[in-house]
Length: 314
Image 1 (cartoon, rainbow, N blue to C red):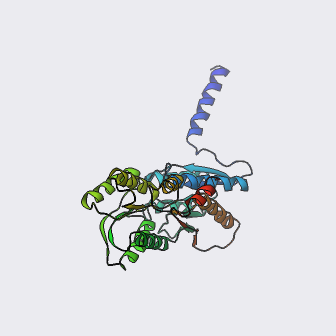
Image 2: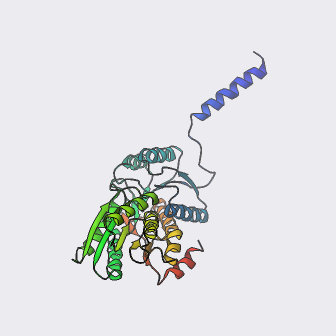
Image 3: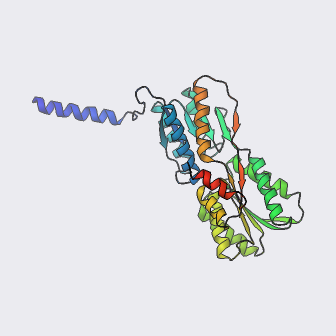
């Protein structure tokens, strides 16, 4: 066998071996962290990832993000891949409080911190949960709604995934307040995926069964923007109030236009930054609690201009 042929065979062998190894992500002298958010196309997570990247750049870190798009197995495999590739920590928004616990187990086995952003996990291996005060927010949305519908009328609730405690807590805060007002009746309630299409469909169903509906509660802005479409199509603008949550730019613009009655600004950009800051503290050996809350703010016609001006800078 001549030298050139032997060299070619050796090169193929090396290439084949390399494909069996995890792709290297550890940049020379840099800390690399993994990110596994629940969705790629949700405006909340887009802004959150932008905040993560902005803060890691300031720290001189690098980010490797994996995609899951509400697929639990895909999220577990993505986190396991990140760990195999040598990240120093993981920021995750778990699709399900129980269904992706294998990802947390893998992080614990690798002895690296795993921090939940937005949604939390039931896993004892969750290092920290950077969360919102869900019941309080749900209660505040309900109080705002009661005030603006005059304490009387029919209300629909389009909830998030039943497996995510965050959405159960939000709904509980909301219904606890509504239960104090006998003139208000929750006449429609459904849970499921956080998509605009679902918001349209269920708002149409709720309006068909209850043409005099006063308000529609939605677990996030994507669903709320769908419900808003149905309300506008039914010529109920200003009559059936639609509330959302997350404070993403499309929802803020809809509030500005008078089509969406309310959203809750969670400042996803700062949420991502805070997640990185907490991971930085943990990697430095600092002791932190098990949960930290971000600030929130109700946004309606009275303050939307101020919020839009600030959000536009991120």
